[in-house]
Length: 170
View (tube, rainbow, N blue to C red):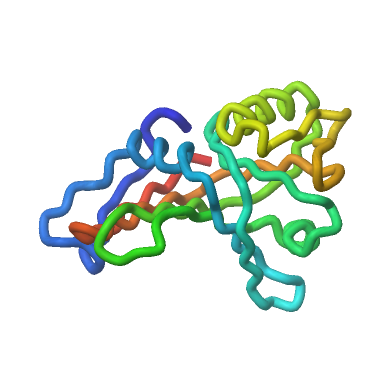
């Protein structure tokens, strides 16, 4: 997904007249550089659940890790569709980015190690997880590595208001 997305549009209802799409590379840089993300899942009862997570952009997907007993993981086992977002909590400046897709547990230790290196490079000593078989072992316990395969990415520019949507190839 480092190349050009499948389809890009600017929604004129939420954009200044004649707005060009947000830059894809800059949007990926925002996703990769964010320190905090918000993960939105749906409980089996149908009610929403939102929680902050550390995350990383690696090999065309957003990644996070979580203990298998956490609420977000119970939700994702029942319904893998989710949204992960990042941005600024102010009006009038910055870009907010949302990624909608399906989360899946990854168990391949070589892939988990590559993702762990991305996390370590990004977060430094704060992210102390090591790969142990098909899990991450760290300060908070034994966690699952989760990959969100993006279907749709939105960028919401707030200084000169515009909304760009990318629909990605399956």
